[in-house]
Every structure is written in C-alpha cells, then in structure tokens.
Image (cartoon, rainbow, N blue to C red; front, top):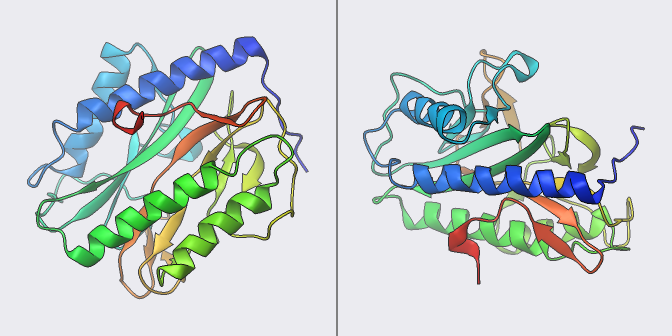
Amino acid sequence: MKQVSIKTAGEIEIMRESGRLLASVFVMLDQHIKPGITTMEIDRLVESYIVNELKARPASKGQYGYPYSLNASVNHVVCHGMPSESYKLKSSDIVNIDITLEKGGFIADSSKMYVMPSASTQARRLVKTTYEAMWLGIQEVKPEATLGDIGFAIQQHAREAGYSVVREYCGHGIGQQMHEAPDVLHYGRRNNGMILQPGMTFTIEPMINQGVSRIKTLSDDWTVVTRDRKLSAQWEHTILVTENGYEVLTLREEERC
C-alpha cells in the first residue's frame, strides 16, 4: 500500500495557489459554455488560459498518454469524455468539465457540471443531487474521521434519491502527483477505513448514475459511459484536512457563503 503524503505548511500554500488558479479557470468558462460550442473549443480555451494567462500547466495533458487538457463528459458519459471537434453542445445537454492544473510543482483537480438551458427536470435533479452528495462527503472531513464516513454520506444521499453510485472510479490523494494515496471511495461504512489526519489532501468526486451503476469503456480506451445509456453526473473538489475540519482548495467564488 502506498504511503499517504502529509503536506507541510509550505506545500499547502502552493496547493492553495494551484486550487485558486483552477477555480479561476471555471470562472472563465462560465462565460463560454453554452449550446453550440464544441467540446474541443472548450479544451482549447482552457489550455490557452492555463498556459498563457495563469502561467501554469494543464496537468491532464500527457498524463497516461492522454492528449487533451480536460475531460468533457456529456449526458450518459460517466467520466473521461474526450473533447471532439464535431460534437456541439445541445440545449438539452448536461456536461461535466474536469480539469487539473499544476503550479509550483503541485496539482489541483476539480470538475463542474454545466446544465444547458433546455435540460430536463430529471437531468437537473440528478445534477443537484450529485452536488449535494459531494458536499455531504466533504462535510464529513475532519481529523479522526474515516474515509468510510465520506463514502457512506455520499452513497446514502444518492440512494435516497433513487440513484446509483459508480464504484469503479473514486477520489484520490493529490499533490506532486495527480494520483496519490489514498483511494477515496464514494460508498462505504461509517467508522471504516483510513483515519484522516491534518495535512492530507485528496479529491472527492462522486459519479452518480440516473439508472444502474454498471458502466463500460468505449473503444477509444478513455470514454466511460453508463451501460443503460441513462444520465450520469459528477462534481469534484480538492480537499485539505485541517486541524479542525476541512478546507476546499478549489472552492469557486459562487460557492463561498
């Protein structure tokens, strides 16, 4: 089992900056993501902004051989959707934009759902429930809590709404590497699993399906879709365990109380 990296005060400051910059990427995107834009246009906007405006690096590009700066997962795509020159967002779509950014040697990771203006009531409910589930998981984070507490809170909320949680993909430790220990499952039992310590940094990123949890990977070896073709939604933040609770390093201005 890989050892969990406990970040120093100096490393945490760098991660705060990476997270702040990544949050600003979504602020930029809020002005551009609308029906008619292609997912490849979104990718180009993000890469240009990260490199030229933020003087940072899109950490997904080149990771495991992935050729783009983000994942764009539309409707029944669960995760790892590849940008396309040909696919234009429709007015009824929901799309998850998942971006990683490295600055000063440390990586932040976040994703946001964008709901197009004519999306169905059912799609909006799924997106809202998934966002709530992520935050219920985040609110479990504090020293001496367990990873199982996070997963339990997420799974319970999804199940109560009649949805299923994808089990094949999970949150992860993050820092100098995009994927570090521990794995952060979005299902589990209270008081079970690794005990959280101050200085741990990891993502919470539940993928919740409208139908069954079963998924499959398409022939491009990246795109993961629901087997029943029903909708899927995901949200993600990078989290720091503090002395008293948690800090969301990728928090966007719209989410500040």
